[in-house]
Image (cartoon, rainbow, N blue to C red):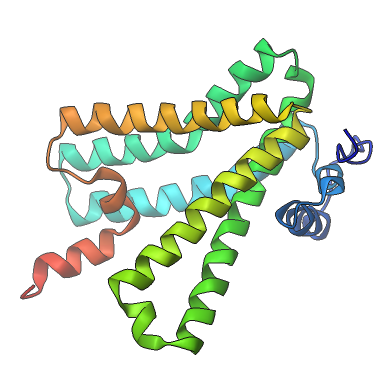
Length: 215
């Protein structure tokens, strides 16, 4: 393949290098993978912002509703963070790409934030074009569709470049991630019917306001 990227460097790059790698991979530039480290420290650094948000969200969730169900939501959220790493590591071992996995998961966790930036850019464009559209159900569907589609493509692309996979293998990896997350959500749904664990974990303040408002 011609878009495998440059040979990665062994050292752990700084934030500026990471941002450059995120922007390159987010634009479909394979050389961006070389800007991410291939060490355990690099993986932990990429995981740290997610864990920080998890701790904040967990504290808000338990503080809003100090009950057993809140603890389930917090554990569910942690599983959502870590499950893709477990699934991709298993596939990397199966495909004999385990030596590339540390750099791949580092890049995957960092580049996930690009989806957020893309969503914000789309929302801004929609607001400039038609504020009413952004506030409508149709606008929400468009925004969510763009974010989801871009996230799928980026997950596929980073896996293909980071683990040196064929196109079909990268598709399998994406489907495996989606399947595992869907299975986890289904299990939680069976154990706690009529609960929106992930939604409530992400938006504890909105939930609290909603419970205290007339609507």
